[in-house]
Image 1 (cartoon, helix red, strand yellow):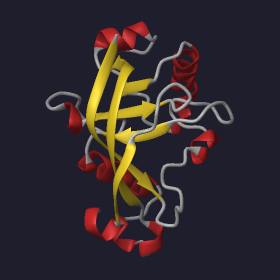
Image 2 (image 1 turned 90 degrees about the vertical axis):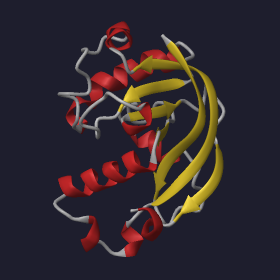
Image 3 (image 1 turned 120 degrees about the vertical axis):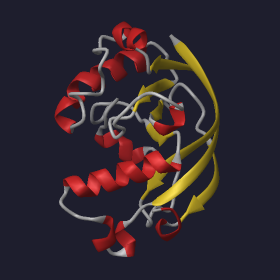
Image 4 (image 1 turned 180 degrees about the horizontal axis):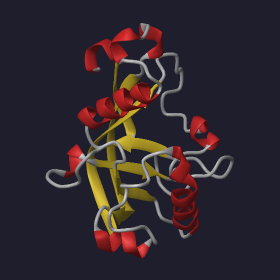
Length: 174
């Protein structure tokens, strides 16, 4: 199953990032790519979901956003995107097609589960997929408007990067 996405995406980047569209950091590995394999541009369908992601990441580390120094907080990138051919794994059928359970991402919230999703990403990237439209592991429900619970991981080897339209400092979006 494939999907087309035309609209706004959001990406979190370190405040010190001089090349905010660089995908070099993703070569360390992520949910959909093993370390040292291929780059991925990880994005959210809403600023709200990006905010929840950042707050969740810091909460896992035992720190509240309010306790952090400004230089530790990420900027939010607003991206204009038009991409066709995303592998859609937001539905039980889409998940089954790639070998993930219908309840995904339940049980796959932590980095310990990444080897499973990374192998899915390797297969999709290798088959020429432009990226993955997926349920966010940060969300707690995957119903209602998709922008509230979905992410897009773009494979820049197979698709053009979105266009940066705005960079918002943390004090304006977190």
